[in-house]
Length: 315
Image (cartoon, rainbow, N blue to C red; front, top):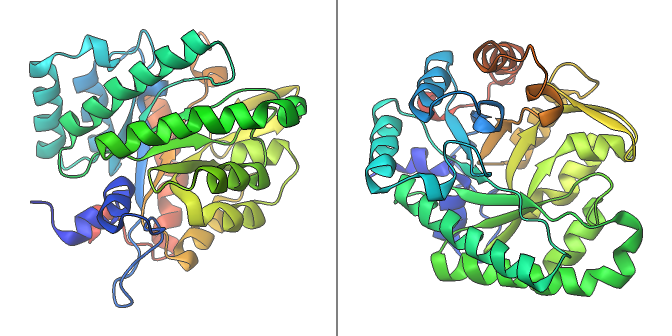
């Protein structure tokens, strides 16, 4: 059994334990928030899964987010029962959490695409429970669509995300959608509207300020708006405009990560902050996943310490 303080930073488990409450923020009055720091294998496609896990643990991360996209080593259809058991064993031995599974399930396309997305989502929730039976990770995706087609597509989007929420309810797994620059859901207001329409504890959001930065929005204001429905936080930088932009490694742009972490701490957020390496970075010919993971850790980990933020393995 995972101790209570270990459960606390695993946001999906926290949500499940408290059902319909905003439990990614909830803590006992005498229990300080615990915030985990992780790295995603979206930026580690060239590594074997066992090597990616080992690298993240050796660097000092508290968790690892697995990418389930086609061609990645942890795509669910590529992992048999023994593979899943071995990953689970390695995570346990290295004291590394798996707080999230990442996929790309764009909405607002054909009915056939939506049906295929639901099947992928179900396979993802099965993997979530296989990898972390006591504390299954959230499963997350963008929703796509176009910003300027909101009025004509929002009802259909709600219908499709309602189906996502039902998959979450049936599997007891939190499903997250991510507001994204230039997409249908590109602001906190639209994310909150969608969430209110569906009104399910099994549907939450991923907060990623890089997208709001492109939209010209404040970090603190957007984060405070979305925290009540946020299950997970991803970090990377960005520059440009919603239409013409580039995503960067955290620290290569203008984002104030100390401010981000302080808002999370002050709000009592009890979950993960995870580095996402965009394809704008990891598709470059000279990209190397291990030095990149180490660089991101060296840039951000000291901020946790300077703000006296308790991390899982320190709890």
